[in-house]
Amino acid sequence: MGRTIRRTALVILGILLFSLLPPAVAANEEVVIEVEGFAVVREGNLVRARELAVSDGLRSAVEQVVGLLVDSRTRVRNYELIEDSILIRSTGYVAGYEILSTRLTGGTLEVRLRVRVRREELVRDLDHLQLTLYRANDPRVMVVIPEEHLRRPVPDPAAETEIIRRLVDAGFRLVDQTQVAKVRESEILRQALAGDDEAWRRLGAEYDAEILVTGEAFSEFVGNFRGLISCRARVEVRVIRVDTGEILTAYSVHESGVDISEAAAGKKALTKAGSSVADYLIEAIPSRLAGSRRGIQVFVKNLIFSELLLIERKLKETPLVDNVFIRDFTGGIARLDVETQLLPVQLGEEMTWWPEIPLEVTGISGAKVELEKKTLPGETIEEVAE
Image (cartoon, rainbow, N blue to C red; front, side, top):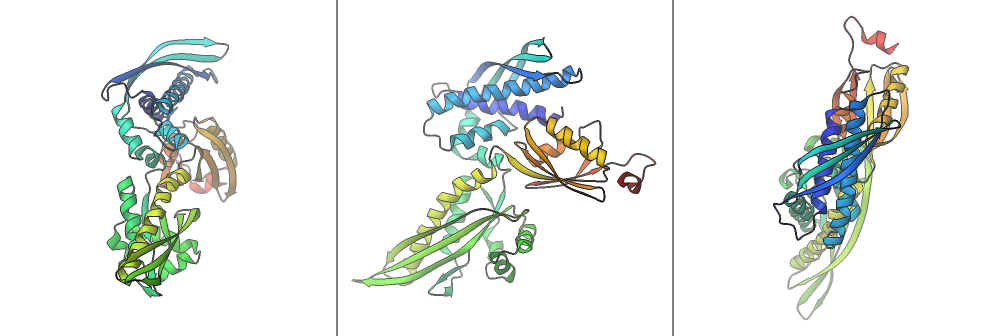
């Protein structure tokens, strides 16, 4: 098994263990938990079976710790999302572990582990959504929402500004708003709003964004009541995964604002609407991206059909991979859909460690891994593709 899965397993255990600790435990104290892990020995490979058994043990420890976490930290929201985030976190949580014993019974290897984990980092990350964002591959978000008051464009959009502020405070990485200003009234944004997939991809590529939050915001005069002016605002947004063009979610909200001037009342209504949209997005974006099964498109070049079948089999044997589907194979290029809890970079690294077929990663995006089969000395690409 590749180093990616090994590191993932270690982190899995660590994160889980952190969570499990009850609040009575001191923040810097290490917590020790003993667990068992199991794996089937395939083709007599005990080394790989031990790694798989350790991974299974770490996952089991995580489940136990999450149960304690829910009991002792009832204020934690999105329990299932946080649990999934813990399972995949890959740095900083495990203080150490040791294998206490191994036992082979009827082709199944059992290991018993003692794991030491730190609590402080996990509690901090849970409180700041960092785990869920990491599980979502820490996407860079671009927010661009043109705004109008009484059908006139607004140069300093209040709803967009409020959404950006709230997302930054929650821990999201965002494209700088000064760059966004260049796009707000552009033709490419109009094309994107009209549903042009290529326009979304061009925006994402130009501004290095994985997620695009876009839509429209309007405010209008309602009435004048004893010198106080009331305005009403509507904000509609769509959240788009740039590399695939998938609409992750959509949301709209109405809010009102009152002030002594129409401009100020409109701004208040739009700001309140932006805040309501941000409340939704802070929960919705990670939950849409970080589900227990992540869909990753895998493209591999320079293959023959028997090698494609080998890749399918190896993927199905990879820990944390749930399903594999061959979608297309033309001219030596294969496209597969993989349902997995791994991040794209982790899946790509795991595939490069397979001794049966030499692969190298040529590209990685938010939901896509591109690989190429290495040609052997004296072998041409044309011969490989035949």
